[in-house]
Length: 459
Image (cartoon, rainbow, N blue to C red):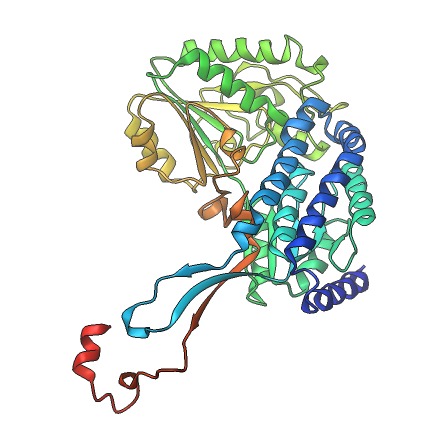
């Protein structure tokens, strides 16, 4: 495997250095080919997502395929404009020179994707790599083997390996890939694995884009429209069974509306998933036995030593099918294990508050989350006093849908951003160019600086 990786990367270096990835017409052709391949393999990918995650076709299309289709369309429409040199003003000190910024591809890139949205989170960065003029080496997740197998077949039947290659495998393969020298590593996963990626990249001073996660708070103020908030929050937590990097992780509810909101939340879950979510085709399963065991350990009825709080709703599970019901935990200690790490499942710990400043203090004392959600009329105040990768006011999840805004983390939740033009820029270097004519040569910059007093006024 190491030999295959090294040999293929050498071919990609030669292919890039020969300039084959540079023509915009070729990049657009490849994006069309990717779109066509996605259409051809759409049914196979949907079937694989059902097999690995119990993800319905409707959810697979809305949260995976449609997002990639939209990203491709956006790049095809705007790539030519993004790639144009940008003329910049030149200060009087360098006149009559002209200035511009050109975008050039970084080169040979590595894209490592997670299992929770295995199609979207592998192919969306690939769109940016192709659009910017890079080569790409793809690594899908081994935790969704059927999806990875289909993606591998699709990529190998569509692209030349010296331009876009793909390899399957576990973390040992990740280590082999990270041992190589790349021009950019694009990684989506947990903060702990992100640190390992960054450590490996540091050996070669390789730039990284890290799309990580964290505990994204969902704040329900007393001024919120509780019915709308409950419906949107219920959907956001049920989506992919909470296995979403920007899922609302825990609830902070004003104590005056706690009881009413929780009743509405349960009601909305029943509307979305029926009274028996286990029989509902639109409710995803937990990805692995190990992941399910970790989630069960948070439940008071599991007799786990790290369990905390009380089950207000849900708490049922079936290990045979990796099913875990949407669950609400009340009376949870802020220091409980369920409040220390990203849950990545359909469990909602609940904390209450009286004053919004207490919420702000609680959030800002913790690691910066990938998303922050606020329901109420004081959203701008909360935004001004907190930090997160992205945010929604009176909604959840939906900021990822807009290709016109960047998606990314901050601090522990990641670095760098992508989607739309930001994807193009993530795989590009913005190169400053100053062009100076030779028909005149200003003497003031040369030693012995005879016009120094005049120069001081100019610079």
